[in-house]
Image (cartoon, rainbow, N blue to C red; front, side, top):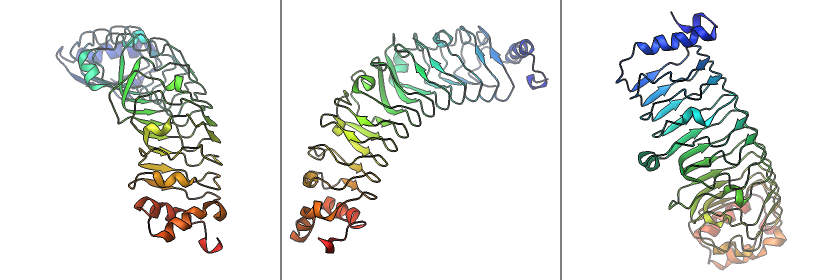
Length: 344
């Protein structure tokens, strides 16, 4: 008999215990998807101390006991996605010192509380980093110490598709992110360097995704992180200005498409770190002549801007001189889609 035959929470909890009773103590993987489980009481899995993989997705779980996963010190993968969890407590994950992957996506979480990972730390954990998925919830409040009181190393931190409109300063100051940090499809209006400041880490592969928010301005010291980072995606925001000291030149790949930029700060193209800069679908009418200082291997995208012929005469002269680099040829093609040089 499956739990799906009844909606009585107490019965479901007892049935969970009965289902687990059929597993030997040395079990390492369990999947209990689509069982209509409604809660995970304290010490539910303590008879199975060697569990490494636990899948509880696609249920009706709305409550996690504060010691729901007590004793699971070997657990590496925990999937709680597609449930009805509205509240989480860091105590629920206290014993998961080797956790490598935690998915809480597609729930109803509204608040990230303090000390969410108070005891999630170990040498093995540090070596691999944590994949933490909180996407597709209803998060609108992040406690300043949500990621505090721990030396957290993330491989991927996903906060996409929530309702976050602001983040506390230094909220990520105790974290390291090795691969991907994503805050897409939220309601952010301002992100400062204090918000993004993280612990020093010797990495150059971090991708930051902040697209589809409501950010209107990139302030000074937007990045406090060590060079050089990989990708910054700020597309589909409302950015109208970039501070000259924003510091976004630490990224190799920058996507600023579909914003409201009318001009670029002096020195925007003065460094040679860029591999790809996407400025398409903005309101740019001119481009600095300093663009030719970009690397020959760089790609610059300027389609769907109201570029004016009279403001880029320098480009026509450079093209006619025969001294164009591969970059300028790519750049010229982008402009020629909209500008007729015969009108110069």
